[in-house]
Image (cartoon, rainbow, N blue to C red; front, top):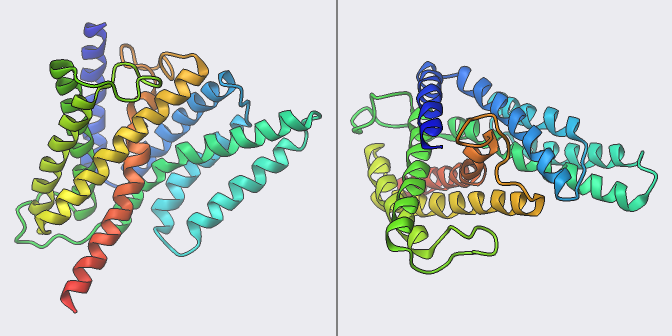
Length: 284
């Protein structure tokens, strides 16, 4: 199993790095493809959990959300319109079911599945709202400001996951939501959170922002990354499945790899908007 995981990582890592280095629009296209695959896996799990939704709506909505966020940014009403469209089309699709209870469950499953995976749209959304980075900032000339803030998100989430794993394995103190994910411990959650806050604070200082803002952002990402991981575990437990899929040998499916980002990306999106507003307030 470990050999499979290492081989898969060795194949996937260069692809991810290459897409990241080439920048837009390849990042958005790559995330859109991930969203489509994750939507397929999500609707399979939802069906196993008793919510057989309209998979086609999810397969269209998730990548469309990613592409739309990249094209339209955070224009007023865009996100609300997308959510409304998913709710309405899901309801209309459910009308064809002859048993009202099955129609309602299909409506609920479609909405949950489509909107859940569509949260990946906030990855290109971060690029759209990313605060400018001054030329004198330590990270100022590394990449464009959008990719630098994406790097902050990725490194913070990876730091949380890595340190949560090792702290949990080493200390093994206090079960954390063991009715959903038996392997998680409070020592892992706390260790991962502390490490994520430190790393995020250092990275944010490297962008020229205040360290306090970096600590708050790091805490926000750590909490939501953990919530995203537990949410997917809840779905898999309800479905009676160990992994979301078998696409990546030793790693499960795509949803297993992006679950933390599903919640952390919108949290960082909101955090960057607040960071920008705070900076503007301090200048007035």
